[in-house]
Every structure is written in structure tokens, then in C-alpha cells.
Image (cartoon, rainbow, N blue to C red; front, side, top):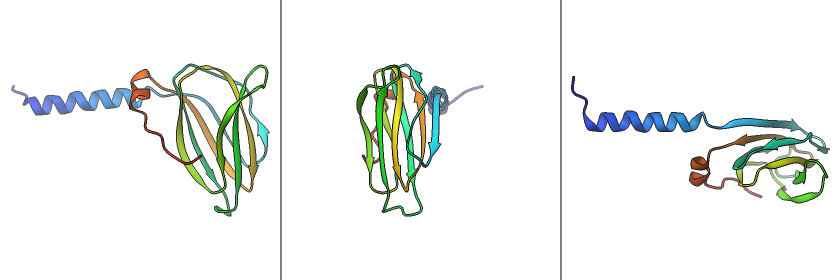
Length: 130
């Protein structure tokens, strides 16, 4: 049985893509509509934050997401500041133990923290507003 080279290449490409598609590992997920500080989560680098912020008044919301040290709760940086509904993905290279501090005014949020492979991190393209 002969396999054409282009068919073999297509099969190998599909296997590579399928393997990478399953390499994300969900570490933590948070959703709600109120101000809060999340429970701590531990993540290995690289990792992504896949986020979505919506609201009944999509152009009149306020949302701020800050990254905190998971143990000391010391401020590590502002991740997002929004005044309208949006979604996106942010890459973080450094692992650790973290929490998020969420300030939400008329906003609903859904946040997913996922570990990714080094190969996926190299292919990362920023998405979304901040």
C-alpha cells in the first residue's frame, strides 16, 4: 500500500496539532460578578489566563484584575483594566502560587488558568484588550 507524501505530512501535522491541543491543563477557574479575592492556586510556567468579561451594560462596566502573591497577598501587578465587555488570553512565563483580586462594577467574569507547554508559549499571540 502506497501512501502519498502529502497525505503522510497532513496526518503528521494533524497529530502534532491534536497533541498540542490537549497539552493545556486547567489549574483553576473563577466566575462571578462581585468583588473578591480568589483562593490561591499553584501553577507552573508557562501559563495562560483565558478571560471573558461581560455585562448587561457592555459599555458601562468597570473591571480590574490584579495578580497577588498567593501566600503573602502582596501585589504582583495589574493584569486587566476594562470599561467595556471583552475577552482575551494573556501569557505568563513565571510559575508560582498566586491569587487574583477582582474589582467588578456591573461586570460578569469568567477566568480560566491553564498551564501550557513551552512549544505553545512560543506560538502565543496576544488577544484581547487591557
